[in-house]
Image (tube, rainbow, N blue to C red; front, side, top):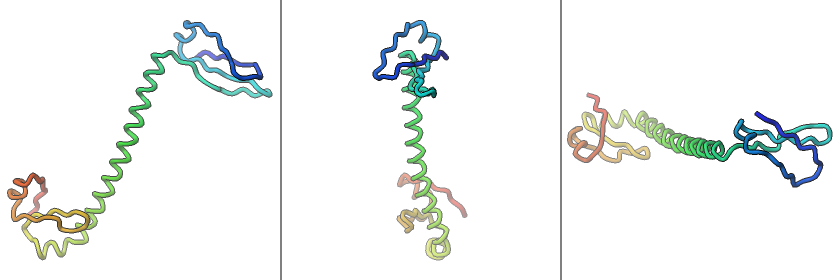
Length: 127
């Protein structure tokens, strides 16, 4: 990676850079002020910036999906806990039946998995 060092004490800066320098890869722009040096920017080719921009969009989309997945997972865990809490009552009232639990309550019940599947539900049937 090439490095450009800015020694001027005033802003804004004007940099002159030939395209050949960018074709060699990113160019760091550093500023020296008061004896210390710090990176103030990085110059990349338009193609490399486009790839970075696409990568960043993918990362942001993944982060959103993970947040959404986390919310779904939490809701599912709440339903599992409700099922575990309700299991003695379910066995007493609905033994050998299929039930759907939503928001911690029996939302629907069916006599058999076949009847449930006619309604478009998927089940795990345990005898």
